[in-house]
Figure 1 (cartoon, rainbow, N blue to C red):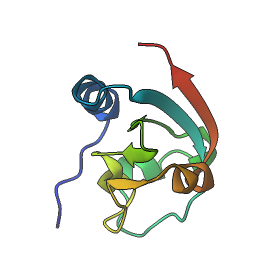
Figure 2: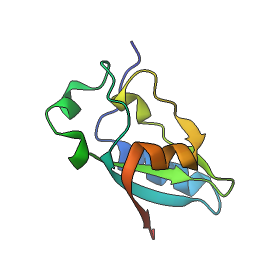
Figure 3: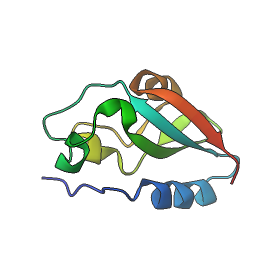
Length: 96
C-alpha cells in the first residue's frame, strides 16, 4: 500500500509552487469526484462536499497534486486542469 499523506497538502503545494515558475496555487473544495474504497479513513468521517485541498497548476496547465493518494490509491499526482474541475466544485486561486 502506498503511504498516504494526510493534511500535508498545503505544505506540499507551497513547495511545488516555489519550484515551478509562473505556477498558480489553488485551494479546492467540495469534492465531487469518485470516492474510492482506498481513501484515507480520516476523510471518510467528513462528507465529501466539505473536503478542502491544495494543489499547484503549472504555466502549461498541468496540476501537481503530490498528496492526491489520500483520496484513493488510483488518484494521479499529475493531471490536466480540466480533471481538477471535474473532481472539485470550488476552485480558489491563492495569491502567495
